[in-house]
Structure formats: structure tokens, C-alpha cells
Amino acid sequence: MGLCGEWFAMDESQSAVPDSFVALFLRPGSHKPSLPRAEILQRYELCEDMAQMLTETARIQLMDLGVAEEDVLERVHAGLSASDTVGADEALWVVRRLAELLLWDLPPALEWRVGE
Image 1 (cartoon, rainbow, N blue to C red):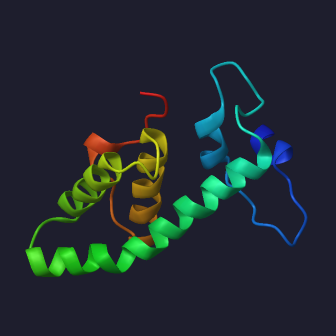
Image 2: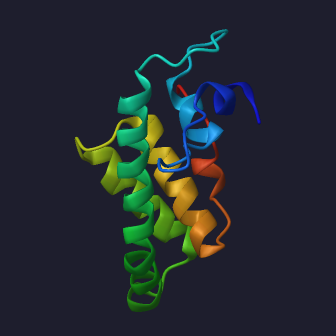
């Protein structure tokens, strides 16, 4: 378990937040997230739920629009980025998680880059 995981260890009744999500809230050189644990958990649950919900939408777009998987992911990212629901880093995390759930490759334009 990484430093984030140790900081974010929870009892069995709570969700485990992956290090990749906690990293969104780490400042360079810091090991302590910039938000309280409870708030990070809320943000994670929102983002994970979004990724899960978007799987069916993404599959439908792929079939109905006849576009490539990377085009679907880029469209989803554009939509998330235009909303006030998630921040820029969270939008990238959601799209990355969506790609993982669908077993799709992440487009080079959306490769992981926290803090940009």
C-alpha cells in the first residue's frame, strides 16, 4: 500500500479510495492531501459513480455514431470539462476510469497528467 493508501486506510464499512484518486489532491512534494478525508471520499464516490454510469452511454455512442473508442472518450472528457460538477483533474480521472471499465485504450491526448 502506498503512502496515499496508508493515509487513506478506512474501516471495512467504507469505500477504499485508490491512490490514483488521492493523488489528485496532493501538492508537489507533499504526502498529505489538500482536502479532508471525508471530502475526498465524497469526490471519489461521485467520480466513480460517473464512470460507472457513463459505460453504457459510451457503448451506445460507439455504436450509434460509428466513431472510434478514442473519439467517444474525448467527447466524454469534453462534456465533463464543460461542466461544473468535476474539476479538470477529476474529469481526466473519470475518463481514465471509464476507459479501464470498458477495456479501451486511453487516447494519447487524454493520457494521465495531473495538475496541468
